[in-house]
Length: 134
Image 1 (cartoon, rainbow, N blue to C red):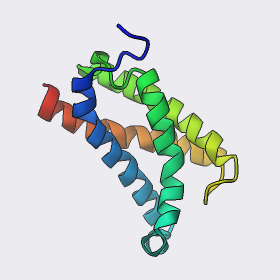
Image 2 (image 1 turned 90 degrees about the vertical axis):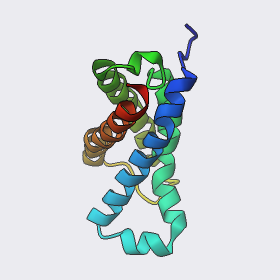
Image 3 (image 1 turned 90 degrees about the horizontal axis):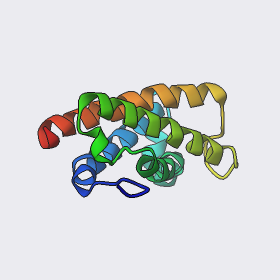
Image 4 (image 1 turned 180 degrees about the vertical axis):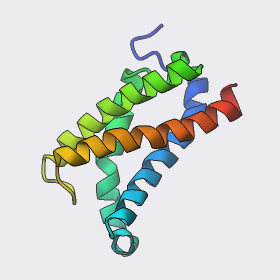
């Protein structure tokens, strides 16, 4: 077992699902806040909102074992996914706090991202698990 404990089969099974989950989560948030039409005509805003969470996930997922063989079961899948997303959210929120992105840090938003980001990831990863790893 390496420090990162990244399994190539798990990456192949989950990477696309994770990207879909994070993009869908951001798009739903943009819609809920009445920003989707604006975002559609200003793609850099979408990238600016996505970037902190994608960066957070790219850093936190391997460290949090989200791409390890430990996720090859329902219990491991839920635990390591949520743990990794909480770390990704914390990093994303720290990046938002820098003021370099179109949205800023808000503690309520951090909780919303933690809860709903986890749900989006668990749904897409659950589908990927059932389709590929099971």
